[in-house]
Image (cartoon, rainbow, N blue to C red; front, side, top):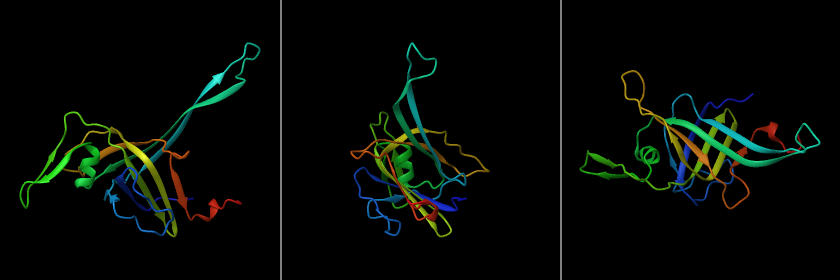
Length: 180
């Protein structure tokens, strides 16, 4: 049994090189989104199939895979440039003065594909998931209130890259041994 005791989400411009192991630090270009709500990160993976039916059979004679969908859901509770620009695609952050900063939110944002990294640990067990291409495709309401942190709820959809993989998941969990 594993739990995600601690972790981080990193974002970078699409095409930024990600670590290929569990020990290398995230290189320049990757920004840590900072604190996330204590709900952590939800990962969903689903497939759709199309049944091929035959006149001679009441059950399908074949199923064809028609789509694969992978999403990460999380709520960023650290309001900093990286999280604000991820929630508001195409937004620009400028310094108006030494202590005043301005976020300009575009009326018609374009696509905002990024590279995404997810890292979490459970004691000595470390996991990293790299999504070379993805973007925020759903946003929850920003609630500003007295009793909870202001959060930016986001769902990130993974897209296929030039490789056949939609994502790569690295782990040092001994239960993952390929011979197991």
